Picture 1: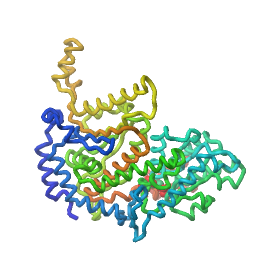
Picture 2: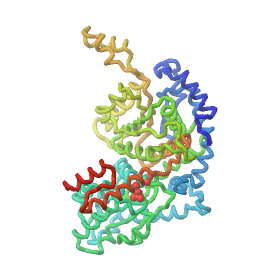
Picture 3: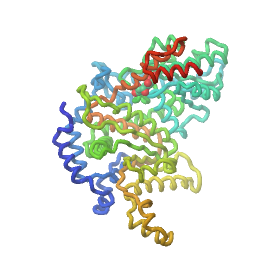
Picture 4: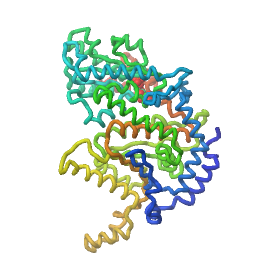
Amino acid sequence: MTSITHSKSWIKLKKHHDEFSNSHMRDLFNDDPDRFNKFNLQFDDLLYDFSKNIVSQDTLNLLYDVAKEAHLSDWVNTLFNGEKINFTENRAALHIALRNRSNKPILVDGKDVMPEVNAILEKMHLFSEAIRNGKTKGCTGKKFKTIVNIGIGGSDLGPAMVCNALKSYGHKDITPIFVSNVDGSDISQALEKCDPETTLFVIASKTFTTQETMTNAFSAREWLLNELSNEDAIKHHFVAISTNESAVKAFGIKADNMFTFWDWVGGRYSLWSSIGLSIAIYIGMDNFEDLLLGAHEIDNHFKNEPLEKNIPVTLAMIGIWYINFYNYNTLSVLPYDQGLSLLPSYLQQADMESNGKFIGRDGKKVCLHTGPIVWGEAGTNGQHAFYQLIHQGTDIIPTDFIMPIKSQYKIGRNGEKHHKILFSNFVAQSRALMLGKTEDNVRAEIKDNEGNKNIEEMIPHKSFEGNRPSNSFLFKELNPKSLGRLLAIYEHKVFVQGIIWNINSFDQWGVEYGKQIASLVLPVLDQNTQADNFDSSTDHLINYFKKNI
Ligand code: G6Q
């Protein structure tokens, strides 16, 4: 495929950018009082406001033309039809099948995957209910109170983020804990909170070979056996989620306690699979199914809506506009909801692991910028830390503001006091970033408030350029369904951008490379001789470590 940069629409967009890039959003809003109405989309109660972006209708039309010239709709069909879109691993990427609540057949290699998907959901249902209602107990006859999910990356971030987001739906007598880091302090601090008789370990690893996860799993196993002095304990207190049956068996986990999934589920797209077991145990299977339903609704929206009414497509193409035409290469995700505090890390993986690629599908180096650097923090905390740079720094950071209208908790006057304060900050930030503050505004403000001293000196410091873009998402409340919708919007956004850049968003060779070198270093740490086979920096770091450990 020739690069998208040679397409007619891209060339037109470049020309349009040359003419339009001096526009200021302040003027765009002043010139068109109807701007909001033109630049928002709604899905049920979810409002996506993209009016505070440096775009005109022409910009958007050209961006949609780019998507058309990249054959986006054919690629969407390729994804949804279970074709091996992840060609470097010879796999489909069928997370949409995991949440296919319509149950319409989806074929992989000619076989409908839905019966297997449904069978695992039913197994999760029975298992999670039995843990929640106390029918399944530990080996000493006590109900489980703590679920320790041991996994990393895609086998950790999704379940951890969802359990954190939906705490108000959580079982009151069950605490989920997530252990991911191979740093012994992670598992040690988790075990300090656990009573061995009431702890269930969920070992989540697609491969069941990941060094960090298996090291933590074996330490947990050793701890449990020491504490309970009962070989049988493993059968009762350990569950595995994996595609690697033989490794699970070798660990000592009984077949009934193994939840499988399939090679067509990528790690960072796996919370919808049995990797979500700790979510199902914590919030209950009905709520887990609502999470799936929310995502499924967005899958249908993404597949069926025309480009200009399509939320993930619009979000993606506006991202392309900034990354490839303005060279704004970061994206800040700022959820105004404490429950969503792990969302930036989750989306960081979803985006950066998927689109952090410099080689195109054709094996050649891409000629344009790909995935942005994604980062963020829950509002309002970030406002008191790094927002300064977003307002007045030399880099322009496009920003996504996300907020549920109702809080999961009622506290303060009428139960709404906190939330109204939170919302006023949410909307103030996007307005301030868009509007900026002119020197005249500052001059007037200083005159009013601070007398006439040093006005001219203060003006540059207190003025703001504005024209800093943002998207805003507002929805009624954070619940399983709305969370499912939000996550699916971002998954499809990432997919669309990957198509425009002509990269494979579903592999992750960078992760594999790190794992490979770590496995070469580990044996050297146990040898009596000095390391001398790596580069001089690596050798010296290894030898310094060995000398001082
Ligand atoms: C995700 C990545 C990566 C993966 C972890 C854990 O897409 O592949 O984050 O999820 O490396 O892998 P396992 O589940 O195999 O332990």
